[in-house]
Length: 133
Image 1 (cartoon, rainbow, N blue to C red):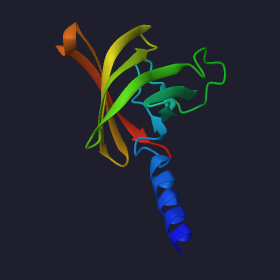
Image 2: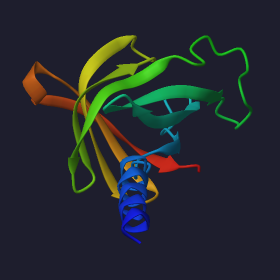
Image 3: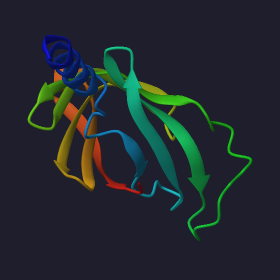
């Protein structure tokens, strides 16, 4: 019985350690200047959260299989702060080809506010992303 209790305790700890972060999933960005948008896959990468461009869509909703940045990391080194907040990471803006300090807030299960900042966080640009899955 003692062995069973110990094994059950380790199993519970292991499942908690491997539980997915609430922000994990596929997210749709807001449309850019041309009306096109991206799907970004967010998942743990080591002890941080990262996001990779999964697919790209034109303004009319057609998938762009030739998009040059497919598979490119767009978010990295994001650290969960608790309460749905993430900070300390970087975000790459494909439309400007610039990298910014970043923070994110999971506002609900289906809305993620993503911001990229310059000048020590004084100037930020952000988007609300919607969960696809």
